Image (cartoon, rainbow, N blue to C red; front, top):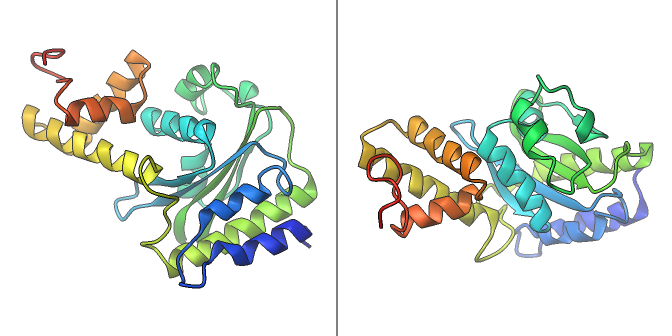
Length: 232
C-alpha cells in the first residue's frame, strides 16, 4: 500500500510530452515521506554518480559534500543496489564514512535515507531523502519511498536524457563545470583525469569551498591549482 498523496504524484512525474518532471517530487517530501529535501542521482557509464535534481539548497549541499569526499550513503546505495538508511547521522561508525562523519557535522542534516534506483544487477542511481531531525522513517514512509524509487527507475531508463531538474544552476550543469575544470587541470598539469579530479576534490575539502565554486573559478581562470597556484 502507498499513500494517496504518493499515488497522485507518481503520474505527474511524466509530462504529456514524455519528458520527466522531477519538480513534482516537491509535493511528497514532507507530506508522504516526512523529510526536508530530496535528491535524485544517476550513475554514468564510468560508474560515477551524477546528481540530476535536488529539491533545495540543503540537498544540493549534501550531494556536493558526498561528491567532494567520494563517500557517503547515496553512493553506497547506488553502487551496491540496496537501501542505506541512517536515522542518526551523528552516530554512524567513523570507519564507515570517516570524512563524512566529520564534515557533515556543520550541515543541518540529522538523518539520511537512500534508496537505490535499479533493476536486478542493473544499477541506475539513487533517491536520497534528508531530514533535519533524527529518527527512522515510519513503515508507510518507507513503503512510499520504495515505490517512488521503483517509479523513478522505470522513468529514468525510459528517458535517460531527460532526467534533469531545470535550467541554470541545476546539479547536472554544476557537475558539468566540475568535469570541465577536471579536464583543464589534466591538460595544464599533464596528469590523468582521475588524479586531476582528486586534486580538485582535495582543494575543495581543504578550503571548505564547494567543489562547484572551485571548478567555476578554474574554468574562468580565476584560480590555478598546482604550479603557480593562486595566480590570476
